[in-house]
Length: 109
Image (cartoon, rainbow, N blue to C red; front, top):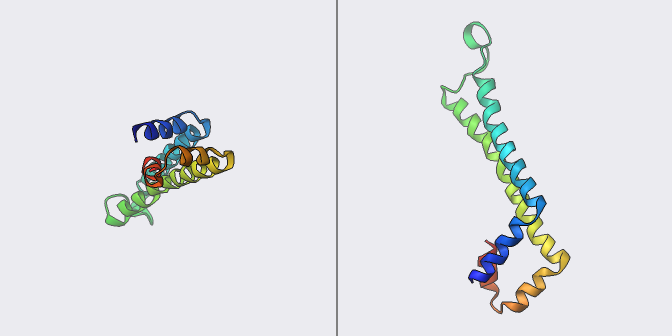
C-alpha cells in the first residue's frame, strides 16, 4: 500500500501541468475572495450606494460563494490525472501489478 501511495505522489509531483493547475486554483480562489471584499467595501458616496458591504450576512455570503470557485481546478486536475493514465497505458500496469483494485483506488484518492 505504501508503494502505491509513493507512486501516486510521484505522479502528482513530477508533472508540470499539475503544478500549473495548483497555481491557477490558488490564484482563482484568492481573486474570488479579494475582489468581492474590495467591491463590497468600496465607498460610493453618501449612503454607500447599492452595496451592503461585508458587515451584513449577504456580503459575507457573497465573499464565500465566490471563494469556492477554486475547487473547479482540483476537479480538472483529478480528471486529467485519471484520463492521462488511461491514455498512456500506465493504468494497465498499475492494475496488473496490484491484484486488488480497491487498494489502487484508495491510493488514488
